[in-house]
Image (cartoon, rainbow, N blue to C red):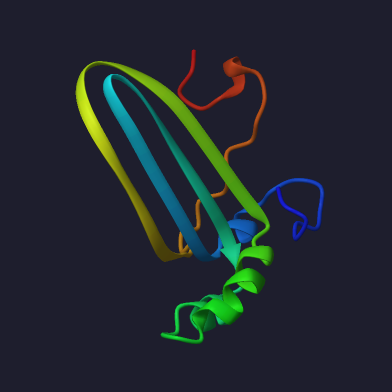
Length: 113
């Protein structure tokens, strides 16, 4: 959660909106990789941030409006020779009607005996 988050727990609505996704990896016989994702960015700010030439003016506000920040990182070993990265913009929406599963003991989960 970031400073823009208001509430007790993350909900579906916190993830809806613009997304900025950064991915990187480097390795030779052993390596490292990481992913950073900002989600729930205000759609209007996201649109302004992607505008040519003027986008940089709104990028900071767009990033600061994201209530969700997810960071992953890891190590890899094996026959690998890699170096790469990616920077992607997107939009996340939820159109389903299925509720988020209730958390509880494993024995109470559907399909578990």
